[in-house]
Length: 410
Image (cartoon, rainbow, N blue to C red; front, side):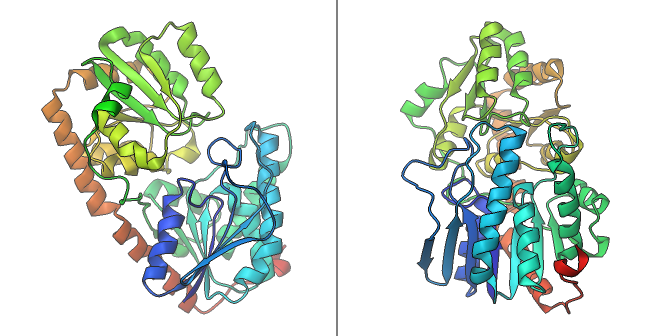
C-alpha cells in the first residue's frame, strides 16, 4: 500500500511509535510518506542544528519525510500552545495535499496537537480512508483565556466520526473516545510500544553509576518531561518527607522545571537531584543505575486511559516501576506485578510507596523487573503492535467508503 503518516512528533524526537511504524512498514514492502514538523520536543525550541524552512524533504527507499514549519512555543502557555498547533495545521494543509493526495490510507498519530491538521487535511483529501491512533485526549475544559479548547473538542469529535478506524491503547481510552463521539463499531485495540533497539536490559557503567548514585540508598528516577501533567511537585514532597532513606533523581527538562527545582530548594530536599536531559540511547544505562523508575500523572479523567511512553520503556528495560497514577498506567503495573502504585497527587501515599520501595530487597526488585519485561514482550512488543496497525490499515483501505467529505459536514 501507499501509506501516509501524519504526526506532530517524529524522530529525532522520542516518537517511537510513528518512527518505528514508518520503518517497519517500509521493511514490509509498503511505500510510506510522513508529514510532520521540525523537532522541538520537549522544550518547545527547535533542536540545535535544525532550521525551519518550507521545502525540507528527505527520501530513502520507499520512505519520504516532509517537515513543515510551525510556531515554536517555548513558554508552554495555553495561548502559545494553541498558536503552535494552529500553525502546524496551516503548514500541513499547504504541504499535505501534494504529498498525500494519492495514498491508499492515512495513519494519523492522534495527539491533540495534530487534530486541527488532520481535520484540515481530510477536507482536502476527500475520501481517503483514515486510521486515527489516539495517543492522548486533552480538551483543557478549565482554560478560560480563549475559546480554542472548545474548537479543539469539536474538531476531535469530527475526526472521530470521519475516521474509518479509531485505534486505542487501553479500555479506559476506548471509553473516552466513545464518549467523545467515536462509533463503537470502529474502535479497535492497538497498544503502543517502545524503541526496542534502544530500550532493553543492560548494565550501568561505573561513570553512570557515579552520576546517579551517591551511596547505597534506594534511587527512584523520573526520566522525561517535567511538566504540569507529570505533577512532580508531589514526588518532591514525598521524597523530602523521607530524608536520607532514598534519593529522587529527575532526568530531563520542561516547562515546570523551575517550579519543581524551587520547591525542592524551599523544602531543603537534599535527596532530590536534577540531571539535564539525555539522549534516548543513554537512558537504559541510567535506568539500570537506578532502583526504580517513577511514572507520575496528575489525577485527570483524560489521563486515566493514557499509558505514557516512559512506562513501556521501563518495562522493556526490566526496570521496576513506582506508579503515581490512576487508570491504565496503574493497572498495567499491578497486573504485571512489575512494581508499586498509589493514587496520583497524594504525596503521603507516594511517600509510603517510596518507603516500601526502599525496604524491598534487591532480589525482589529484580523479580519485579523481569515480570515487567515479560509483560511487555507478551502484550506491548513492537512486532505485535506493528502487526496490529498494519492490519487496521488494510481494514480501513479495504472498507467501502461511507465517509462524507468534511466540506459537506462542516
